[in-house]
Structure formats: C-alpha cells, structure tokens
Length: 314
Ligand code: BDR
Ligand code: CA
Image (cartoon, rainbow, N blue to C red; front, side, top):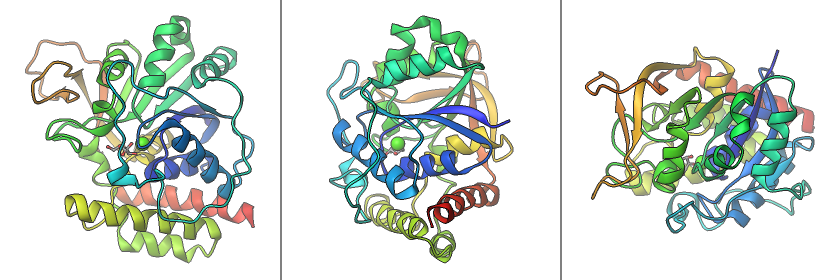
C-alpha cells in the first residue's frame, strides 16, 4: 500500500523535484502540499508549488499556504541559491492549479485527524509550519506516523559554517520538532550532498523527451550554476527528494540512530544540528540520521517519477 504523506516545502528547485517524486512514485500517496517561507517569501514559494504542479499535471493534490515568517527571528531567504523567483531557470506560464482557502496548519490538522491511518510528514523547508502544528494541535501526534525531514547535517553547514539553511532559517521551530518525541528521520547535508545531479542525470531527463523532463533539466542547470558559483560544486545536490526517497524505500537512504539537538544560543553556531553519532553525551536517541545514499536507486526513482508524470501529461 502506498504510504500517505504530506510535503511541507518552500519551492525551491529541489523542493519541486521532491514534489514530482512524491506525486509520480507508486509507493507514495501524496495527500497535500503545504508551503512556507524559506527559499523565498511565502507568496513566491506558493506560486512555485502551483507552477510545478501545473506543468506536471498534479491537479488532485490540495496546496495550502502556511507561515510567512519564522516563529521568532526575522525572515531570511535563499535568493542567492534559488534566484529572485525562488525557482529560476525555466519559463513558467500562468499556473492553473489553485491553492485551497485554508492555512497550511489547518489543512494538515484536518487531513491528519481525518485519515484512516497515521500519515508521514515530509518537511523540506524551515520547520515553522510543523512546529506550529505540533504546538497548536497536540492531538495530532497520534496521527503522525513519522516525520522525515530534509535539514541539518552531521557535519558542517551551508548557511553558516555550522548551520544548514532549513534549520538556520527557523531554529526555534526546529528545536520544537526535534524535541517533540515523535519518530523522526533527519536527511542532512552529509547525505544530500551525495545526490548530485551530474551531467548523466541531466542527459537522462532530457532523454525522456517530455516537456516535464526538459523543465527538470532546466531547473537543475540553473541550480548547477549557483552551486558552482557559490560553493565550487561540479554538480548541484538535490537535497529535498532524498527525504521522499527515504519514505519510498529505506534501502535508498541508510540511517543511524542518534541524539540530535538544535543549537539555539551558540555565539557562532546558532541553527547547528549537534548529532551525537558516537554517544559521547548521555542523551536519549531522538532521531534516525541519514548517513549514506544509494545513488543509483535514488536517481532511478526520481527519473522514473518524472517519466511517469511527463508521459501522463502527453
Ligand atoms: C535546503 O535549503 C534549501 O535551499 C533547499 O531547498 C533545501 O531544502 C538545503 O540546505
Ligand atoms: Ca527546500
């Protein structure tokens, strides 16, 4: 049976591919897409969710907009990485897919409590919506099977030397999620940096010979240019689909149990995830932490999903 999930995202090039993977893979039942401010302001991340759903023919999945700013600190965006639109590269027409007139947190609460079985949450953005959901509606806990998120790192950061963007953008929200006691899987930079969209991947997407395949290749080409300019990467890492891939097949993303704490007060380390893989600290395990990626299986599933959606689009 497909696993029911809700993606909470800030599209974002890699968020867009995470949506395609979730919508196009038979192992997933995508119940909803919720958006949050992150890579760009909320209006833009929500528009981008509508854009990618429009070009992929995803018309039966509700999209709801959530929080426009972090819980405590001012908003930061990643326009240096994702461009002025938050999803620069392809030319998108006017989206035809609309959002539902409901706040993301209310939609999540309604879907979770109404679903016959517990649902997996897949956040691929700052954790503002998820933290608000858990604090405003403590009753949802029993309806959440697990939270499988993209964020943090066992190593260094990408927004500061210590902190990864999704955690750094709202550390208080991340702290609430990591201390929630819910089953949690963290897919951080240490593993998403193995999901590189190398030229052979772009060639496979182009070779699908569909409009959607070409749009994905264009997204990754823009993403490649910023990763080359900012970090000297030879190919861009597709962070967010890694979390979806973990739900699809745990064999794609290998994990280790660890205690994870979010640094809130460090002078130079605010937003860092302190991952105790070697049990130095006497702290209970609160997360499964991704440590290795099966790159071939990962790209086969991503390209398979893009192919499925692209073909059904005609
Ligand atoms: C994360 O930050 C965003 O820029 C990406 O979409 C991803 O979710 C990587 O640090
Ligand atoms: Ca993201």
